[in-house]
Image (cartoon, rainbow, N blue to C red; front, side, top):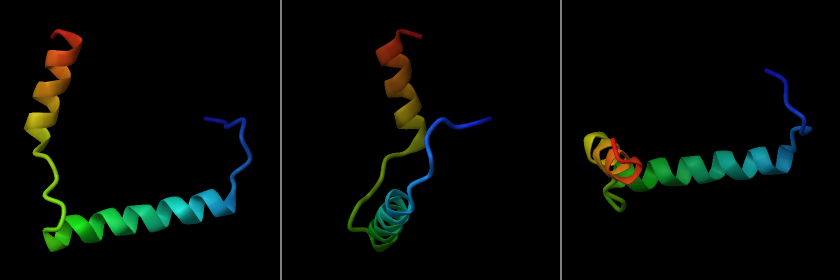
Length: 49
């Protein structure tokens, strides 16, 4: 797959930092996360399946 956008190192860095922050929050219990089955049930409800 080709991309039309040139990778931006600053955006990549910011996303990596955000991902690390989110993982830390979940692992520390600061952010509980959402069970995957709950997410899928909600998506099915939204799209009507």
